[in-house]
Image 1 (tube, protein in one colour):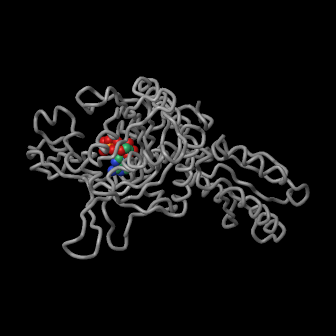
Image 2: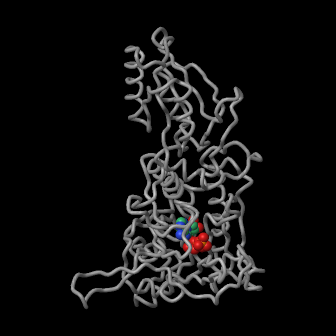
Image 3: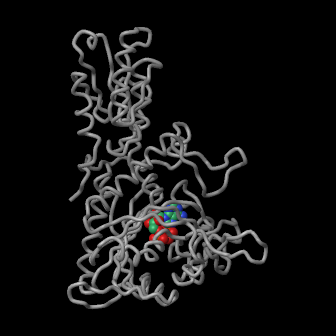
Length: 454
Ligand code: ATP
């Protein structure tokens, strides 16, 4: 069941150019290029005041849905640096490579697995038709060194995927937290990849964040849990989207499947970049625990407390990206709406109220009327204890509504002269722009009911 109430159904609005989102993010403090004053670093970004609120809401909502709502799922937070053998066991040292080709004519660089099949077959650049070079292999792991004495320093890696910590901590979790199979371990954490073709803003970065569920099952129950989590994750994304027809599953072809996988699905979302992976649902069988068992010499089998059967659990993995969620939700929410009065178009972010960075703006109708200002400030101080609230008294009320629409604030509260007479305020809703009058005393509950995930 979708936890967040479903939003409006999709319409035929055109895809939003990424540049519009980049500009909005910079202008309103969602995302900045990292080290911008030094010219920036490709594929690395910082999150500003609104970005960090949105990101935290996205993370919290995932954690709430996955860990808090499932009695058989627990969470961990592992370190970014691990023992280097982890990456040998996982196969990343050997196989975590991108195969790249360059166009001899226009000098553009492409990942072979991202090229249309006909371009690969004809060895032809998709941009200019030029001839492509022989593929070259690049390992994506980012190296780092532990220790200070030259010659004794140990080479290791910043984790290339966050989920490895879950396999490493699996045995500790079993022994310390009374979980029994079937159960899951969740984690949200940073991952680092020396992507050779970073780009499209947050879509492909070199430092990014992933969320993973690794769900441990008896082999005989693998299919049923795979189907369960596949549907659950799809519904989760669906519940946050305006354009529901832009989400689908893509099943991996036999040639894409890992040797241990019976099935794999990507949840894909369609944007101006085409259909692109958002989250992967993977059949990992006993591969990860067996490999770590083998490389570490530690027995990672599970002993069933009732049947006494001993086996290596099989794993269903759901692995998605916080940053891709951030970007996709902005692309999904952004709209420029013509103004019926023929003035400036209204830019509105139709973000789900539960994840919008600011929940309510409190606006005195005029800033030179002391009673309006003090009443507004008092309402602001009450509400800010419960939710992220902005107080704004600069410019006319129409402009202030627009400012909030552009950052996705679902509600605005206006304190006007009637407020001073009857203690009611105007509550304006972002999407419909409908306005209702509400007693001040009822405001907190009214808003909480609409912005809290349930
Ligand atoms: P892709 O094929 O797009 O490179 P992947 O199959 O390598 O992705 P996974 O290793 O399965 O991705 O990672 C899980 C999730 O992490 C992806 O579904 C995506 O949401 C996110 N992700 C992966 N690479 C990046 C990246 N470079 N920048 C931002 N998010 C990423």
